[in-house]
Length: 301
Image (cartoon, rainbow, N blue to C red; front, side):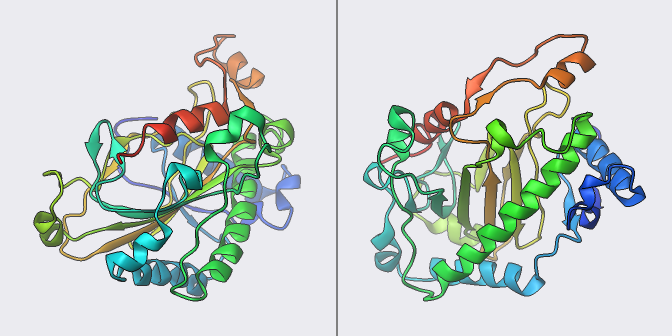
């Protein structure tokens, strides 16, 4: 990732949809692969268009999120997150922690549901089922459709990224991410004037500086900026980012994290190591272990 990129690129990913990615010689596919490679190397972020998800659904998800956060605290806390819920549910402003500091946002955290014993001891900490709001009444049905569409979109974008790295389209399927875990966060950032008045630590940062720790992140927010991170032996590096809402307007963001298989071993791809002369820059880890370590240190009681 270059530190001197001047703008976030806009990439039309439509050539990767409808199985067109199978034809790697297709001119449209070749062009989008080239753009993905450049964006991942230089910015680590890119805007997505031609993704096939309707503007009305994207807006509806944001609007429902805003309506939930507009509810009285007593209503929101009915789906309160706790260790007993597998860390799913609502968290109040200041409950999420980044680098030891409370973040100025509230959120609903959702994960792919994990049945007891599904991943053995590896997944025990996040066993549970998502806690969906009763209001808005259509929250669950709309979000279910949205998650399915984002899952398909993520899979297609990753096929393009696999080609950009020099691999085959299915590098991130099978044992790596053929049965992807996912995480979703519905986030609300108070306007700066409101944040000043809250009885929380003096901290105007909506979310402190961090890098995402999954495979691919798609973000639907008020200024509609998607973002990306992927393991690639350092060829594509995650971009450090943070959130500061300097506006008096309440800001909504819905982040979808498309992850590897929960029990996948994450290690540099062989063809990525070859590009760096056989050097392995990253140690291997099991995705589920990594996620659970992060979850257990992300919150304050």
